[in-house]
Length: 121
Image (cartoon, rainbow, N blue to C red; front, top):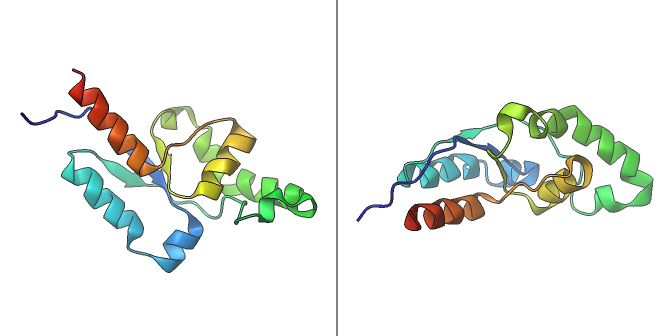
Protein backbone atom coordinates (compact mmCIF):
# COMPACT_ATOMS: atom_id res chain seq x y z
CA UNK A 1 0.00 0.00 0.00
CA UNK A 2 0.87 3.65 -0.23
CA UNK A 3 2.38 5.32 2.82
CA UNK A 4 0.27 8.17 4.17
CA UNK A 5 2.75 10.72 5.46
CA UNK A 6 1.74 13.32 8.03
CA UNK A 7 2.63 16.76 6.68
CA UNK A 8 3.78 19.14 9.42
CA UNK A 9 4.46 21.83 6.80
CA UNK A 10 8.24 21.74 6.79
CA UNK A 11 10.25 24.91 6.25
CA UNK A 12 13.73 24.92 4.74
CA UNK A 13 16.59 27.15 5.85
CA UNK A 14 19.15 26.82 3.08
CA UNK A 15 22.91 26.99 3.44
CA UNK A 16 24.08 30.28 1.89
CA UNK A 17 26.94 28.64 -0.05
CA UNK A 18 24.49 26.10 -1.44
CA UNK A 19 22.09 28.86 -2.52
CA UNK A 20 24.98 30.60 -4.30
CA UNK A 21 26.67 27.57 -5.88
CA UNK A 22 23.57 25.47 -6.55
CA UNK A 23 20.71 27.99 -6.83
CA UNK A 24 18.26 25.31 -7.99
CA UNK A 25 18.85 23.23 -4.84
CA UNK A 26 16.07 24.69 -2.60
CA UNK A 27 13.46 24.14 -5.35
CA UNK A 28 14.83 20.63 -5.91
CA UNK A 29 14.24 19.87 -2.22
CA UNK A 30 10.67 21.16 -2.63
CA UNK A 31 10.16 18.77 -5.56
CA UNK A 32 11.49 15.82 -3.56
CA UNK A 33 9.16 16.62 -0.65
CA UNK A 34 6.21 17.11 -3.04
CA UNK A 35 6.89 13.65 -4.52
CA UNK A 36 6.15 12.29 -1.03
CA UNK A 37 3.07 14.49 -0.60
CA UNK A 38 4.83 16.83 1.82
CA UNK A 39 4.98 20.61 1.77
CA UNK A 40 8.34 22.33 2.04
CA UNK A 41 8.33 26.11 2.09
CA UNK A 42 11.50 28.13 1.66
CA UNK A 43 12.46 30.52 4.43
CA UNK A 44 14.30 33.68 3.40
CA UNK A 45 17.49 33.91 5.43
CA UNK A 46 20.94 35.35 5.11
CA UNK A 47 24.08 33.70 6.43
CA UNK A 48 23.84 31.82 9.73
CA UNK A 49 27.20 33.32 10.74
CA UNK A 50 29.22 30.09 10.92
CA UNK A 51 30.70 30.02 7.42
CA UNK A 52 32.75 26.84 7.71
CA UNK A 53 35.18 27.26 10.61
CA UNK A 54 34.87 31.08 10.73
CA UNK A 55 32.39 31.07 13.61
CA UNK A 56 34.53 28.66 15.64
CA UNK A 57 37.54 30.98 15.59
CA UNK A 58 37.81 32.93 18.85
CA UNK A 59 38.40 36.28 17.14
CA UNK A 60 35.18 35.83 15.10
CA UNK A 61 32.88 34.51 17.83
CA UNK A 62 31.10 37.80 18.59
CA UNK A 63 30.62 38.65 14.90
CA UNK A 64 29.37 35.13 14.21
CA UNK A 65 26.80 35.41 17.00
CA UNK A 66 25.68 38.84 15.74
CA UNK A 67 25.19 37.54 12.19
CA UNK A 68 23.17 34.59 13.55
CA UNK A 69 21.02 36.93 15.66
CA UNK A 70 20.25 39.14 12.65
CA UNK A 71 18.85 36.47 10.36
CA UNK A 72 18.52 32.92 11.62
CA UNK A 73 17.83 33.26 15.34
CA UNK A 74 14.41 34.95 15.13
CA UNK A 75 13.18 32.29 12.68
CA UNK A 76 14.68 29.35 14.60
CA UNK A 77 13.23 30.53 17.91
CA UNK A 78 9.78 31.53 16.60
CA UNK A 79 7.18 29.29 18.27
CA UNK A 80 5.25 28.83 15.02
CA UNK A 81 8.31 27.16 13.49
CA UNK A 82 8.85 24.60 16.27
CA UNK A 83 9.34 21.12 14.82
CA UNK A 84 9.02 22.37 11.24
CA UNK A 85 12.45 23.76 10.38
CA UNK A 86 15.03 21.86 8.36
CA UNK A 87 18.52 22.98 7.36
CA UNK A 88 20.82 21.69 4.65
CA UNK A 89 24.10 23.14 5.93
CA UNK A 90 26.16 21.28 8.52
CA UNK A 91 27.66 24.56 9.69
CA UNK A 92 24.19 26.07 9.93
CA UNK A 93 22.90 23.17 12.02
CA UNK A 94 25.95 23.53 14.31
CA UNK A 95 25.25 27.24 14.71
CA UNK A 96 21.59 26.58 15.61
CA UNK A 97 22.66 24.00 18.21
CA UNK A 98 25.24 26.38 19.67
CA UNK A 99 23.17 29.55 19.96
CA UNK A 100 19.54 28.35 20.08
CA UNK A 101 20.13 24.91 21.67
CA UNK A 102 17.97 23.25 19.03
CA UNK A 103 18.60 20.44 16.59
CA UNK A 104 17.43 21.12 13.05
CA UNK A 105 17.33 17.99 10.93
CA UNK A 106 18.69 17.80 7.41
CA UNK A 107 15.83 17.46 4.87
CA UNK A 108 16.79 13.83 4.20
CA UNK A 109 16.51 13.03 7.92
CA UNK A 110 13.02 14.53 7.99
CA UNK A 111 11.95 12.46 4.97
CA UNK A 112 13.27 9.26 6.52
CA UNK A 113 11.53 10.00 9.81
CA UNK A 114 8.23 10.77 8.04
CA UNK A 115 8.46 7.44 6.20
CA UNK A 116 9.33 5.54 9.39
CA UNK A 117 6.36 7.10 11.19
CA UNK A 118 3.98 6.25 8.35
CA UNK A 119 5.31 2.70 8.18
CA UNK A 120 4.70 2.10 11.88
CA UNK A 121 1.05 3.12 11.74
